[in-house]
Image (tube, rainbow, N blue to C red):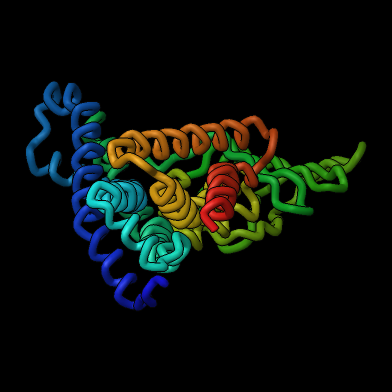
Length: 344
């Protein structure tokens, strides 16, 4: 008859077994990603004689992005490497013989994964956007020797129920908000507004001396304020989606359908930390040979990356829409569920 085991002892032991490989894995992936960044920019940095201080700033500004990748991948590495050592030393066999069910390993690993997911989500929501914007500005300066102009061209938005808003040029205004040039707005009723100039401020597009076309009726107004249900954020004008905080991206997604996939991906990537860790644990507990661990680390990461890229392509092609962001989590989650059922 197997002796009863202490779940608390098992939890502490398992977390201790993955803690050092996790630190090692995170450092390994940080080194690989940073090396890839520097190698891809080396030609430009050398040809322009970029000062070492600017190179270090690029690495520093890129660090939150790097951590966003290294933290979840390092966890996959740690789980499989930690379990491989336990398999090699026959500790898993001893645990099973002592009455420890394979599923007993699941709660502590999922708890750790949830903690890492919270850190990854916080980073992607508030820390990484600011750092990414600074990285892009510094990189622009390295390439062109000047600061970004902050001018956006050919901007189109489709606020729900309000038609289509378009401006040929958008750039920050000194008094706040943004200046609009060559504006055209088509309301759901078919009324068309056009103006050479306007101001995007608060939740309105204020057009100066616009023309209003309703069927065969054409008239010029002195000024009109058209509702635009997204607050203008001056700093957002020079930033891509990755440079927007979660709140800014949510606001933009209300009027820009293209922003909805990046928004969904912020949440999906955080859930992906848990799903990856779950599947890694299930596969690790099913191993019979420790030598397979490193190959499985590569296979798991590569497979998730392929699905991650495929999701972006599906969303870009309007085949699935922003829901495509959840594709990697759905596929890996289904595999983890099947594996968990088989471990019972």
